Length: 345
Image (cartoon, rainbow, N blue to C red; front, side, top):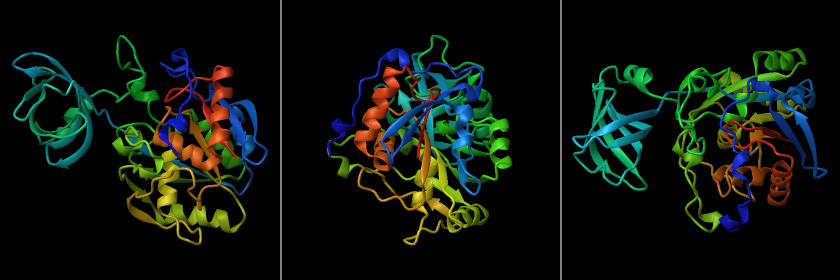
């Protein structure tokens, strides 16, 4: 298959620029793989699609304010950094915009020199290695001056807003380390989670820190040549036990998001048992992949030609997913991070 086979038309006005006033007010397109049919629902109806004994698996990663806005010294030219990965104390791999003039030895400052940086290496695709000062307490400084790392398709004159610190985060986020939100989880409220538990749906939490690998562009034409960068994840023995007990009793495993799906499929044995893990995901999921851990998937709508669209197409079939996307466009669903969702059964 070619990556061009995973393209679709999307009017720009359907890209959600703000979250809805209420998290669970989003729409939900229900896709039935067995019948090839669609239902137009509200997310508040989500609990009704799960049965007693099913297991809902959540990614409890927490987004940190990984977007830094600063200037180059001495020219004063503006610079934007997305912190990707800590390599050593004070030393980070970053994605820089604009990157062209950011060469080795270049000096940066942020918030009137509350934080300064020096370019150590020039990497591919706009990435750089930068050493920050002060390196002691750096995460505290980043928490103070950084901004939520909103994706580039959220285009506002004012940039990130105060609402984003809360809304670009799931209500169950616990483990700090993500540079992007696991957006399928943004629709949940404490009330929805309580309703699920009252219906005897079990809930298991795992952690995959969403990194650059999740949203890195697909740079190859042949889908078979694509490889998603590894991301660290943790599945505790307790969570694995809950998931495996569910499967043994005939329940379904419902993954909330592609990151949850990737972690589960990275830790499942040949027999379908999910193993407790603290490692990196090494699975790239494209059409033709055989799923062993996940029975249903809640997911947002993804960019054309993206690895996330490839994963969802692998789960439900390319033809059905592209038809679902056409349906969503026709019905004026809201797309991407702050948009509506899709439940694939």
